Image (cartoon, rainbow, N blue to C red; front, side, top):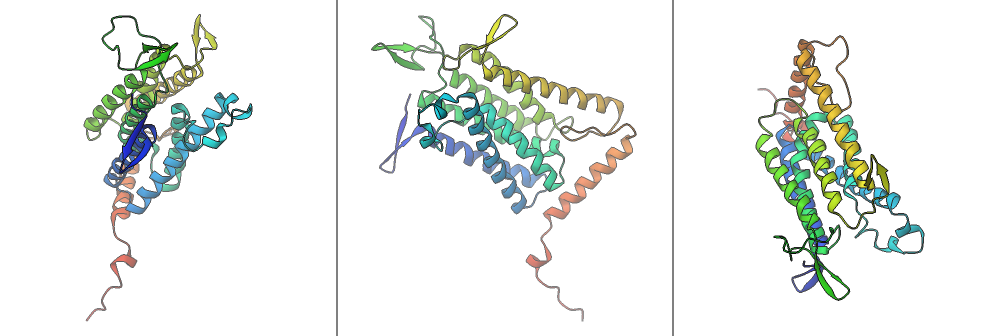
Length: 304
């Protein structure tokens, strides 16, 4: 592990560098995809900035709620609030709320917006987890002797170097694989929302499993004979929510009804013609957003 990096003569925390790199990669890729679906440059930039803020607010709020002893009992971590205290699940929930707000303000279907941003979110998440591995946080339980992963993630325990499960790399590898699948699938989707729901279902399921190897999260919730952490409860909730959205969407497609946006249904009287009319309206909006405004074109020359 490498907790610090030397950049241009300055020593910086690797975690913060990885966090910044993940944000930049996510913004660049997200801006490209938002432009591809028809948003103007200004709308795309505003949407991405708003989602970054919403995700960080959610990540901090979740960490404060689930770890009150770090903030309210004299630990003094409010001083480092800007550089630590980030929770993945809180970030996902914050980004989800920001996505719904952005979709409402832009008059764009939440499925369309979620599909456009899902690959960039998975890529940024993978980079964030590399920063966790370098920092040594989010560490795993002790590895059995002779494991192939021995030495990848270590911790000093009683003056002895102990090999741990590299749970950060488990999550990073899965996030990168999910990004590769989403990126290859984004132009071949069977229905709107496929990428967004896939991310909501697949990553929480993997995170639920990885939590059993985590050593830094208390397992204080007994469920069906298993001791679960708060992260596993949230992951299970996201997984169930994703399955519910997927099931409702698939049923609407089988019945010929138009696909609703995230959290909405098409209505009992909707028909396939209504769905085609809505899709045509979205295409017209995309064309209008991509056209330059009159102010940028300048005044038209008078007729001769």
